Length: 110
Image (cartoon, rainbow, N blue to C red; front, side, top):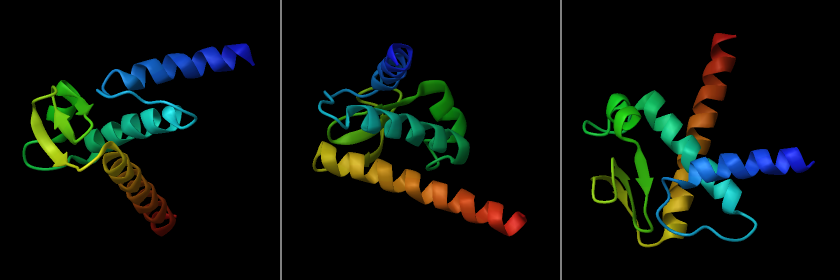
């Protein structure tokens, strides 16, 4: 069990590197992993004409309290928010949409 906890802590530490505000409480791991998954989805599908798959892969995303930016804290804003909870809700919703999209495409091709 201790090995599992240490593994999750390492994964959390990696995911947290691009989040510029503090995550606390029981859901900190969930939120960090959702942000990491969001970046993977953007790398796979792109976001806009500036935040392309290649640009995100090369520069990375940063999750700020009021925005998601490309490359660094003051980089290109993918989207701005009124609070970190709004930003995290957007990230989770986007990931769920991608999961549903991929799931239904697998059913259609099967």
